[in-house]
Image (cartoon, rainbow, N blue to C red; front, top):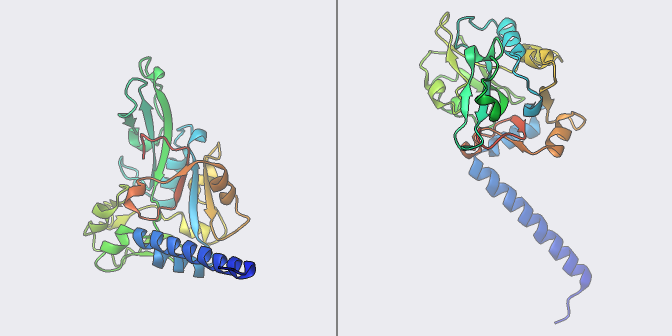
Length: 254
């Protein structure tokens, strides 16, 4: 049977487009992020954060800056962002030792002689500002919500302090403020980024380990970061659409 070459090319092109669209649709339906895609397409900005593990020195400057900027309670164990140290022994790489004294607020003590033989690195953590946020889904009064530019925020005038969102967050990044009895968390310094500034934690980082990025801006450096690094998110199996991207994140963390 004779087939016109032009018709074959046209048909093949249509099949390729349909296959690509279908595959992308299935992928996002499975991840539960179809609505997030629509919001992202309509948004002027779509905020995310890039973290380079190799550059983090565990100085705690980001933790201190966050507490000061956002009036986070000074008592231990209340953090919008914190830093963890992972030490992976060479003989048992599946079970790292993790410590985070006071969230890394004052840095970290020097490793012991036994620990000096282990692979050691620091992992900054914060709210992942998920595109498909479990915390938003469980809030019974809509106090936890997503801004038009992809930041997960809390309206404390509506918050009941029920703790549903605290339990739903797979990243452990929410807490109840003991002063207001309402939930608190990282806001990506929304009061700053909405005025063209970066976050407090990014501003003070001495090594540039953290960087705020706008995924809607084609000239933003975050695109090169995502393109040139082996990038991971925390707990990818949760399919939350996390928007904190880590370069070369060790498998013992994920």
